[in-house]
Image (cartoon, rainbow, N blue to C red; front, side, top):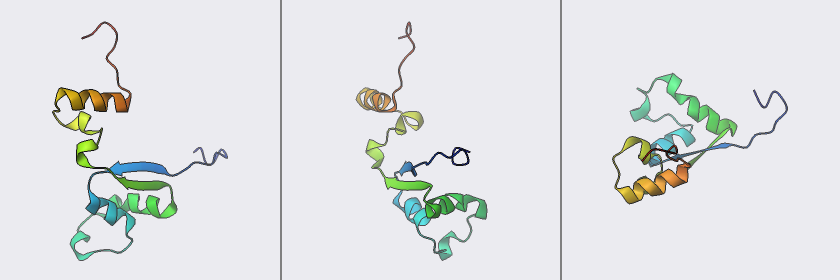
Length: 93
């Protein structure tokens, strides 16, 4: 929608901790072991090819989204919370 209004957008960065998925999304070749994947899940591949999305690898131990999916020690929890800009509402904890 923004591009239709004349705004030039940069590629959206997406960080992942799975090198295989990054390779599959960046590589237009269909591999025999991935032929079972439904065509609707290849949309990210199209977005990468158009330059709308840029994929980056991030080590799993340094992935701040782990805060939302895993139980973490307090140090990592505080580090990732700060990286994501999350704060407790005032008056709690």
